[in-house]
Image (cartoon, rainbow, N blue to C red; front, side, top):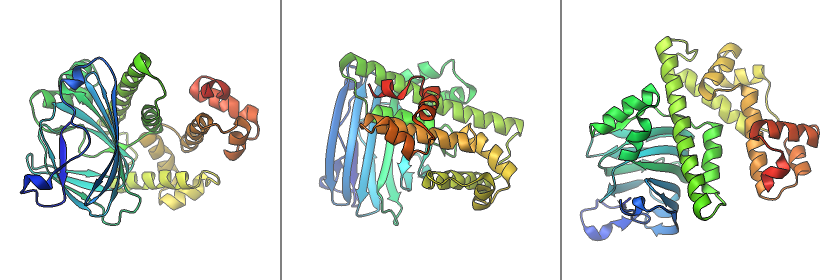
Length: 337
C-alpha cells in the first residue's frame, strides 16, 4: 500500500511523508512471506508498524502515539483491496474527500470496507492518552470476490458493491471485536512459524478472521430481519458494551449478574440475552474465555501452569487444565510446546 501523511495542508510535496513500506501489486503476487517492522517519527507523533505481505493479502498492525490530532492522509498507487478493519484502542474519525464518506472508529469494534480511492483527513480523539492502535487485513479485491462468491448473504451483498466499483462498508456501524477475533489477531501478530509453515499459518488465520467477521454480521442481519433482538436501540447496545468493559476491568473480582445489571443500567433479562446476542456467549462464558485466552498468552511467555491456575482463580491445576483443554483442544503443557 502507498499511504502518505502530513500534518500540514499538504499543498507542497515536501510536506508529505511515507507511512510504512510501499507494497505494490507485484509484491502481493509473490508466493512467500515478506515482513517489515518499522519505528517511524513524524512531526505529529510516532508510530510502530508491522506489515506482512502474503500472496493476495497484506497484514498491517499499527501503534501510534500522537502529539497532534489532525492528520492529512492520502493513498497513492495502491492495489485494489478490501480492508478488514479492527480498531483496538483510541477513537478516530476519517473523512474521505473523494467519496464524501465519513467513517467513525471506536475501540474494540470491527468492520469490512472497500475504499477504491482515499484522500482526506483523520481526526483522533484530543483526549487520547494511550495512543491509537489498529489491525488491518487487506485482501486483493479479485481474491476477495472469489472467496465471497458462495458465502453468506451479507458478504455476497457487499461483494456486489465491490464488483460494481462502489465504495462500501459491510455495515453502517461496526460490531464488537469478539474474543475469537482477538485471539486470532494475537496469533497473527505473534506468529512463531518460519518459511512455508508461516505462510500456511497466516493465510489460514486471515481466512479465519474473515469468516468470524462474516458470521457476526450475518447473525446481526438475521436478528434484525426476524425481529428477535432484545436490544432495541443503540443505547441498549452501548450498555452491553459497558458491561463487557466492566467485566474486563474486574476479572479478579467479577460482579454477580444482579450487580452487573445495575452497573449496565439494564434488567437481568436484557443483560443476559443481549450479551448472548452481541458476543454469542453468556456473561460468564465470556469471562471464562477471557481468562483462558490470557492463560494461553502467559503459557507462551513461560509462566508456570500452577501459577496461572492460581492467578486466574481456578481451585486446582486439574480444574484449570480441564477448562483449558475444553476450549483449546489440548492440555496446557502441550500448548506451550
